Length: 215
Image (cartoon, rainbow, N blue to C red):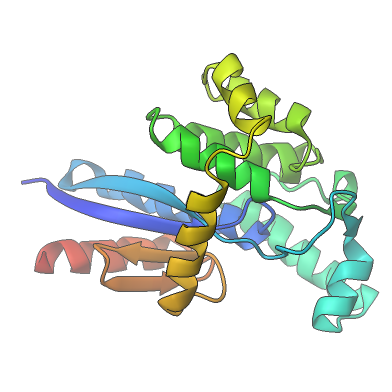
């Protein structure tokens, strides 16, 4: 018997652990198979909501935000690369030199939810930034991701050239922050169970099976 589960995946497209967490979650769901029917909704979270359009050098930004040295950052990047490889995601760190504003990406994702292709867009955006080193604040980048996700390009362009969904995205961001989400990824199952961080597939699988058994 198949158990339906609602999964709210709160994340940012500039968060490497979100890319790892998503692939880990999907790997777990693949292993579980038809026992669980997952209804995944991608929810917005901005790691750097005040970031300007020009972005900031990533080494400088991380040093300012977390106080980490270049050596510590390199160790972290190596770990992220390996964790990504373990779940089939490619981090091309040499192509990614800046942190950018992601608000328009979240507006586009909010719109895409109503098209049924939100997950495809999320994957395309994560790949654009982390694998290809593209600027996720650039409308050209966002439109290429929309095209890759099979979305209507004219409709996507209309969203980006307006301020549509800006208020809705801010409201949703505030909702999750008010409910205690201050770091990502945060994976909420059936609006009750929280799994935090870019956990390995084994942890997601165990948690999902336990939640499904008690559903």
